[in-house]
Every structure is written in structure tokens, then in C-alpha cells.
Image (tube, rainbow, N blue to C red; front, side, top):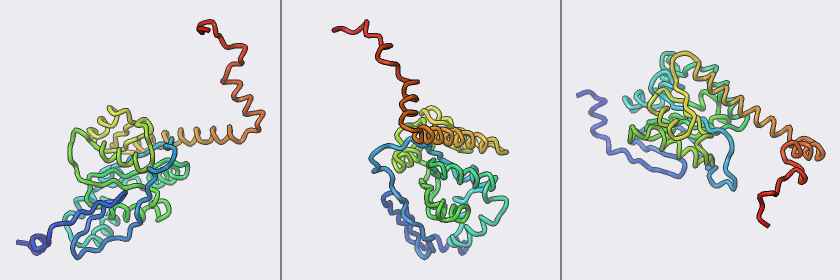
Length: 251
């Protein structure tokens, strides 16, 4: 029996502690990265109208599987560092990915990582290495093991929706390399982008973010108009009282 397997057998069972908006996995004698508690936006008075981008992790934004790598060691710190330094396993289309995250977060889009993974704190750590703490803290990580294939990532997505106060499925975009997850998301009224080789999936995500940006800019322009201009804008949309037809009203 190898020393690693023997060490695993001698360890007590993992203690899974679920804390509000943050899943923490305590493993005996292991270093854990310092991760700030993820802020909860679900208590906001008004629901969010912004787009929610839900990214799968392994095979989507990472070339390799961080979950599998962490599953084979007890030295998580060195494992993650080696993983992120390995060009065959680390960030897929890194420069474009960073640009997409930066643009989406800057205009107010929500971003969540939805992953069948037992190591959420290390996902946050990896994101911090990629984006820095300011941006990575805006990304919500939903990470727990696969339960039902027929549900795809829907449980993860619903948790992310609650966190950001997103109520409508049409506001959600799932970016995933698993076609089954994408198809299930689409059947539930969400947008789905299937990740394949190349950068087409990123181009589609950029299009969605750019459309959101244009809407935000148009709203800002309308609010910046003088009062008279706002009334003119309303006049273009609303008919005058004289144009209303009351012929079908019962008096």
C-alpha cells in the first residue's frame, strides 16, 4: 500500500460544514486559503435585471481538472500552484477570458462559477491569482458534487440566482463544455453556450455582454436627458389622450 493511500485511511472522515453563502470543507492537517465570505445580494429590495453569466470550471475556463488534481493529494497549496503553472492544465484562452471577466463585471453583469467540485475555497484562490482580489471577490462560487445528471447545473444556477437576486431564467447564460448541462439550461429558458475548441464560445459571451452594455448605455443616456427631452421620449411611446379609443369601454 502506498504511503498516500495509507495516510488517507488513517484520516478521520471529512467534516462538511455548510455556512450561508459559503461552503467550507475542513480537512485534517491541511492548509486552507484565506477566503472572504461571499456577500449575499439576495436580500436586496428590488430584483436584479442584469445578466448572470454562469461558467463551468474544469474543461471550460480551465484546460484540465482542478478537482481531479486536488483529489490526488493532501498538499493543496503546492498542488494548485503547480496546476496553475502548467500550460497544459491552466486557464483556457487566458487573455480573452480575463478581458471578458473584466468587461462583464465593469458593466454590472453577475458572474458565478458553477462546478461539480469539492474545493470551493481553492477555486476562489485560483480566481484571485487570475484576476486579483478586487475582481475575484465579485465572482460567486457554487461548488458541490454531482447529484443528478438529469438536472445538469440547475441546482448550482438556482443558488447563484438567489445570491444575486436574479429572478428570471432568461437573464441567465450557462457557459459549459458539457452539452447535456447546456441543453438542460436551454430547456429551462436560459441561454446556453457549448464550449468547444477555439474561441467561438468566448465570442458569443462577448456578444451577450456587449448587448447588455449597449442597453445600460441607452438607459443612462435617457436618464441624462433634460426633463423636456424625457417628456418628448415618452411622447414617442405613449399616445396622446385624444388618440385613445374608448369605443369598446362600457360606461
